[in-house]
Image 1 (cartoon, rainbow, N blue to C red):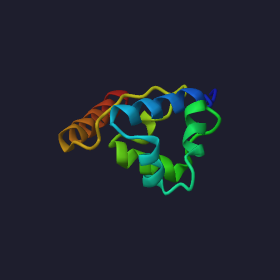
Image 2 (image 1 turned 90 degrees about the vertical axis):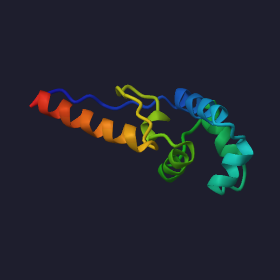
Image 3 (image 1 turned 30 degrees about the horizontal axis):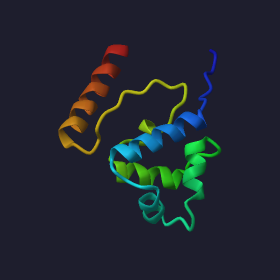
Image 4 (image 1 turned 60 degrees about the vertical axis):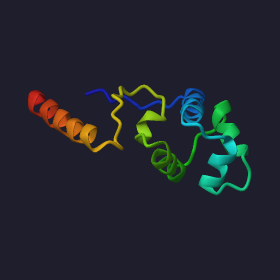
Length: 105
């Protein structure tokens, strides 16, 4: 069995975070204050693809943006977006996952 390695594209991940941030109406200063960063440089590094947020910052951004962490990361994994903040969609997604598992078994 061949193992598929997960590959993370830092540049695209930074662009996704920037787009989500702008779509939600947040500024770099808002994100800096929310994450309690001393300077905004880390955020600009994310946008430039020089680095990605730490795991704890990804979780915090996930809560702030009301999206799953996977929606912010761009890699070689397939992802289906589900708005987790809405209980109706969350229930539907759980049913979908169960149905998918039953079909594959």
